[in-house]
Length: 388
Image (cartoon, rainbow, N blue to C red; front, top):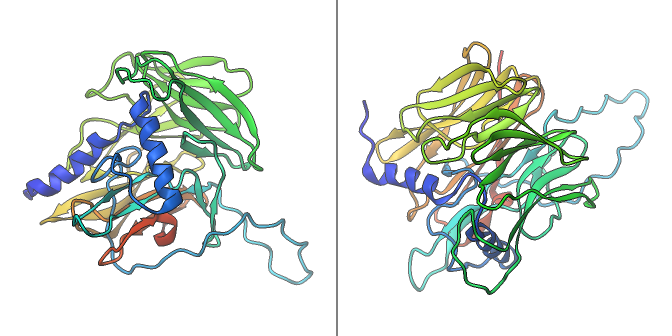
């Protein structure tokens, strides 16, 4: 077995510790506010977590062949009628591809610039390579993009700004609202869902329900129109000190999530049926789970990014597995991550399936040498993997 250098292992584990998988405290609100100010000014804020703080415990990837994405673009206008004799228009991907993650920054030298990689609140990478920066309310996070153009997310608000109090899930003066935005940015739903003392998060959503993880309860469906909730899979206690359903994705009546503690040699995931909660399969990959796990539209396959140590570096791969049998359908190398001033320099920043057999994964990397704080949208590129 390869020995993992202590600094590489610590980098991965620190990133996992630095980012709670679900929000339930004021530190999350304040950290997000600082990140928003940084995104607006492209400068650093000293209060943000140093090293890596990516949603879902993201550890970024540094890969070769840097190629920036197309410039930011406004939403495309409605397509013109098809001209007779012209090829039919390319069908829209089955799933929308969001650039998910917050990123991290560091100042290598006291007198030098801050460097790093940060994400937007709700940036979407379209099939033509353009990036749409959706307007979302302050405090927005954990975005789920629905096929009809709507966005579902959580809006966190500090109701007692400037008042010092003990932080944590039981903190007073914190609002967490489930919010649905229409395709044109209007607020369709804004509903308080926080229960004081209870950590919670958004695992997924569809046209009818948001799927919430509630501490001490498990996975619940929250009806978007009425707010009625139903417990789907009961998990009354935390798992390894964390909320269950980490790195979760919900599609086609199934939920996949990472289970077990962080392990550089084994990525373990459970696939469960939403109806009844029975486990359909337990999947394993020979490496540490990386962000951007995604179920195919029909739920038959799951894309799993993972990483393995290679000396002082981390080799990244993408596995595609059958959710019923666990059969490995594809396993493709993606690149090699190298530490950069305590950061890993880039990463997986979202995944989405084009159809039931082809998935797109977003990678972004810092240039060598990095000279500033970059937005993921500036550096993003897409890796496409298909099964036979």
